[in-house]
Every structure is written in structure tokens, then in C-alpha cells.
Image 1 (cartoon, rainbow, N blue to C red):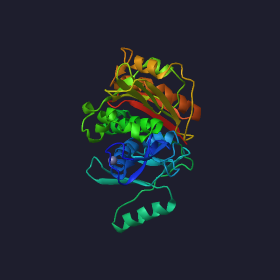
Image 2 (image 1 turned 45 degrees about the vertical axis):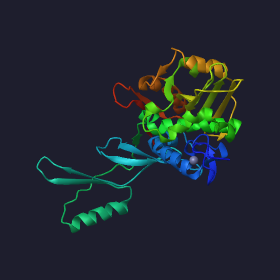
Image 3 (image 1 turned 180 degrees about the horizontal axis):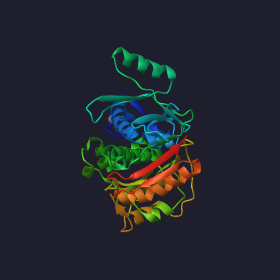
Image 4 (image 1 turned 180 degrees about the vertical axis):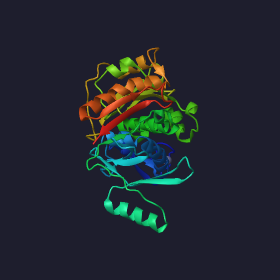
Length: 344
Ligand SMILES: [Zn+2]
């Protein structure tokens, strides 16, 4: 067998359908070579880093069974301390780390303010300051503090080149998973294979889309990744709808020269929390759904529309786990997205 991307027959390894960092455990054995696997791995890393808070919030485990921690901005209620950061753990608790902030006063004097989690680290700071001949003032901190931790998850990552490459890979890998690597290797999917070397979004046969009928066709949650694929014998074309985290959706033109006599249809629904496929009730078949997505009912490449489509799905999850979610209108911030705030 050969690599589904470059046809190399050496150093074959398993290829994930949905990336491992998104909770994906569905694989294609000997699906790709080490080099291609590593290349997609790099793009996945970029994507992972820009979704760390989301993965933390959704408690999605990586391949080592760990939920990533996320860096959050922290405010202490009733105290004027700025620039504090903490770590949000997998269980939602926020741990503060020591912080020293430097500022220059109106009179030109340099001023440093420290916030220390332990008495020992505070004493060390004072000791070092006094050896430098600096004056220190200790402020009373209340024994009980209320932390307001906030983090903003924005949407630009969904439109990035890296996300598009990973989405195209998911489409090809899902075809290989369903029908075997040799079917995915047939020349009719060659244009999809070229995403590996694409340097702009325009070169890639895929678009971000939003469509109300598509969203309503089955129940959704933020833990859900899916692929709905239709290879049309009549139109001699094929498409895959790839959806991440319940509502970030892409239409991929997987082939523009489908050469078989019979159409093929399949779907993969995957639960990233349970790490296994599941079968929801879907109210229309792949051909109907994809037909609607290709119609004027869809909005393509629109950040506001994607925000509107995805936010309710994320909000429903947050309501379930008791995390406060605040929506930042994309008009207010150039980035758009959601800002979960949490107290501990
Ligand atoms: Zn390869």
C-alpha cells in the first residue's frame, strides 16, 4: 500500500481521521508516510495552540489522555491588581502564579508590584529588593479572594490555512477509512491531495459555510466532529461536509471527476468526549444535505455568520457545565468569538 497523500511506499504509519488533539482515535492503518504525517502534524499543532482554551473548556483529552491547561487572565475581586495570569486546569479550577508588574510613576520613579501565591515567594522578593536597596511596602490581601478568570476564544483559527489543510485531510482520510486506502489513492481524488502543498486558501477546493437547514438536520453538541460525503455519479463530482466542534463547517470538493457508475454516500459522526463514533438521527440523506449546502441557502466564508451558527452550540455546552459565557459581537472586536468567564 502507499501514502494517501504522496504515494510513497516507505515508512507508512497510521493516519488519524480527526486529529488526536481533538480527541480523535479513528485511524487509517498505514494511511500515510512519516513525512506527510509529520507535515499535517505541524499544521495540527498550530491549530491546537489556537484552540487550547476551547479544548480545556470542553475537556477534550489529547492522545496521552490529558486535557490541556489554558492560560487565563485573572482579576481579584475588590483588588486593583492588573496583569495577573493563572492556569485553568482540566477540572475548571484556576491556579494563580506569582506575578511581578513593573510600572513607571508620574514622578518618573520605577515601581514594581508583586503578587505572590505563597508567603515564601513573597519573602524572597522582599529580600532581593532590600539587597538592591529598594523600599518595599506590603499590602494587606484579604484572606479569602474571589478570582474572576476570563479567556477569549476567537474564530480566526477556523479560517486559517492550517485549519483548511487539516479539514481537507479529514475529508480524504474519511474516504480512506470508509472505502480503503487504494480507493482514496485513485486519480479522481488527486486535486484533493494537492492541498498538502497549497500556500493560499484560494488554491484549496474547500470553503467555510453556514446553513440553517444543515444545522437543523440533526442534534448537535460541541463535542461532535462529523463528515457527510456524497460522491455523485450523475454530476461526476463529490463533496464532503466536514464539521468540527458541532458547528464549524466546511464544504470540501473531494473530486471533480468522479468516474463510477453508482453514487456513494456515507457519514461519520464522532464524539470527541467519548472518543468513539455514534449514530445520530439525521433527517435527510447526504445527497439532500449537500444539495442544500451548495444552494443559495448557504453563506460562505463569513465570520459573523459562522459566529452566529456556532455560538448557540457552545453556549448550550457552557450552560450544561455551569460556565458563564459572554458573546463578543464580531462587530466590537475584529476577532469575534465567545468569552467564557468563570469564578472560583
Ligand atoms: Zn506521504
